[in-house]
Image (tube, rainbow, N blue to C red; front, side, top):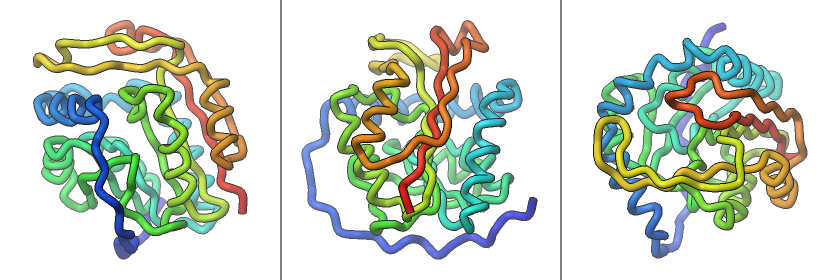
Length: 234
């Protein structure tokens, strides 16, 4: 499938300064620390998870069937999923909280666009995106803080646009002091799929598909994994 031409950057909208929650600071610092080793360990991991590739492929088809347009990989990390979406024909770009992760993404995929930003206040105009995904990028966010993030996703998606989430299944969080070969400080949150689906509905999305699979790798996955595909009504 031929990739679309890269879009002009969506028009930024002004945002008011806000005090970041402390977990955002910890997350940013942690991923700045591990960025290079994170990419070395995970850059080719999609090759080993058939369900990940299948779900991303379905998401890409829905976006292209709707006419295509800019797709935001929100919480893109070092860009491995952004690059995969581009190979599927999407005009994808990435946004991440961590300048270190963005730096590695730009070095690894110089033909793609990556920006530093936060899901709590995206620097995008209303309706700027044909598609958006948060691929395991909400795992460090407490559940109580998800509604405004889902409202922000709804704002930046065009009518008829699709949103894909991937996350860990559960109803608790664990703390990690060491990951990817480095000392850090991260809380990892797991969510019940039905609760996340309910919050997305409250934000104005309608469901398209829901899938839960069992753990595929005992090292990286301690619980089942969930995918939710929703749509902003046209």
